[in-house]
Length: 81
Image (cartoon, rainbow, N blue to C red; front, side):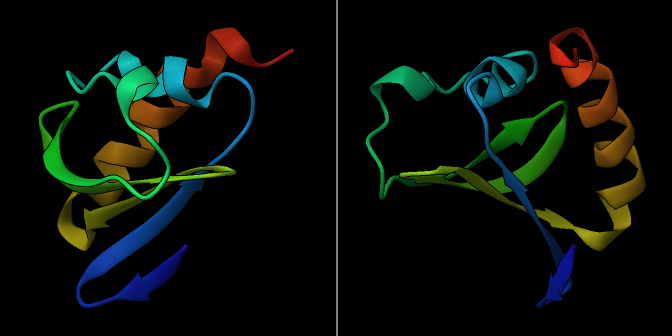
């Protein structure tokens, strides 16, 4: 994770990335074209979400990083083979 302006940067890629984010985000990521950038809640955590060609970039405040990391591990566990 890179640290920038009191936020950690998380890059989420792969065929199931949108489904993982859908566990905690109300944004319709299937309708969001690359280049979309929104400020929203993900798992009750304020984030900035950027849609990229290769996946997603998520900016999360440092103070929520441990919680977010645990949530992300749990939300993605069913997609790990």
